[in-house]
Length: 279
Image 1: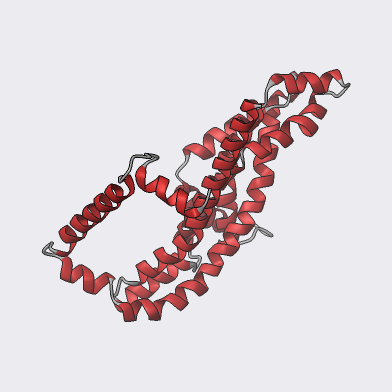
Image 2: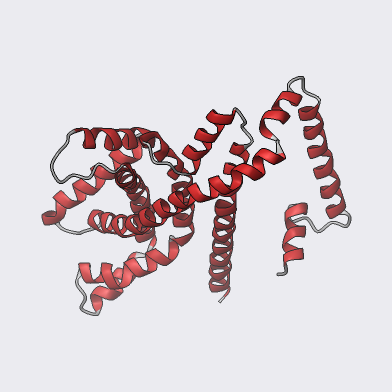
């Protein structure tokens, strides 16, 4: 299916009636035209325009925001690698069989419940200010380090649940077939179930990593000068808020391609499932 065909289906909502694209286009133009008219005719529009839509301020601020965004990217990439590994380990711990592994299963359940229930900014505050405040010998005091630890702890809990859902989605017959070949339950989990589960959860994992990339802006509360903190500094110094549009653009340039990649993967998996059902 070509790009033009996909765009047409989006515009028409899948309808094949003659004239549907024209109706969809006209309704879109009317909707956004009315929305724009409401905004520009509002009493406070001139002040908002001057504060947030200054092209010169935008052009001057964008290079600084991009340089600071490199910190977000570094934080995001390191945290993503750690989360992928730790989340999988946590999910496997929760699925270990037998009473001897009950402490590990209990730890996995408690960890997921706690860190999925805590506000992210609270975890970043406690680790970023509390642990360095103890002044323990040998313990790092770098705010970037503790911001990385906080994001890793938080998103490991979410990703572990994604992995667990993938593991539980594998049909029990897969494990039965592996056991019939002489594999133990742990070997079946390692060589048969987990590889299938990982392939199934790639799209939801990408959704979590979009959230992780956005939440990297929260680390500014502990003093890490990343893109959001740089934006705050510049806005406080100049009282110009167009810089926040520059920040939004930089984040969108990363998150929108990831979102489209996720949609493409979901659609590909759906086509594979339908093709398998036909056969």
